[in-house]
Every structure is written in C-alpha cells, then in structure tokens.
Image (cartoon, rainbow, N blue to C red; front, top):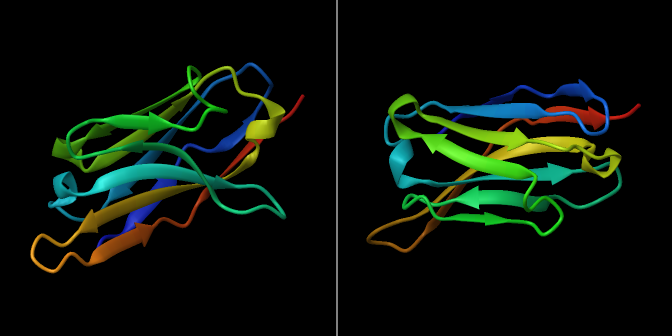
Length: 121
C-alpha cells in the first residue's frame, strides 16, 4: 500500500506563494501517476494538476500559468509550487497517486490526509 503525507500549507496573503510537498512511502513511486486536488468547504473535490510517469503535466484552467507540479522519483516526492495566490485558491489540498495494473487493468488510487491553504488579507 502507498501512503502519502502532504505538508507546506498555511496562511498567505493574496499574491503570495507557497510550495506544497507530498512524500510517498514506497520505492515503486515512479510507476504512479501523481496529482494534486483541492476541496473548499461545501464544494466537491476538484483536480488542480497532474503529472504522469512520463513527466507529462496537466492543469486546471483556474491555476494554469500560476501553479507548477513536479516530481522527484529518487526521493519519492511530488511538489506543487503555487504563485500569485488568490482568495479563491483557499481549500484543503490533497495529494493523489494512481496506477493501472499492468496485467489486470485494475485502477489503484491513494490519497493523503490533506493540508490547509488559506489565502486572505
């Protein structure tokens, strides 16, 4: 089983920056597609950014050109650099890992516990 632990959240003023980190427990980290999702109070959990095993990235339109996702397979880490933060970015941010079984085709999905990001003046 893969365990994920997020860190780096906190309170920041509009226009500020934060870098979120996600540490994975397993040495097979490199075979998983990784992502960041967020959930604001009373709303559904939405995609923020993803990065595949091949280093292809995808971003929600609302964060494109402001956020950058990256991964460090040697250290089992994934990051989300967040710049030019807006109050609308306030949410709990969750790290996600997913793979499709090579032989079975079964989907495996894991989630971290979440880290709070609050953007306020």
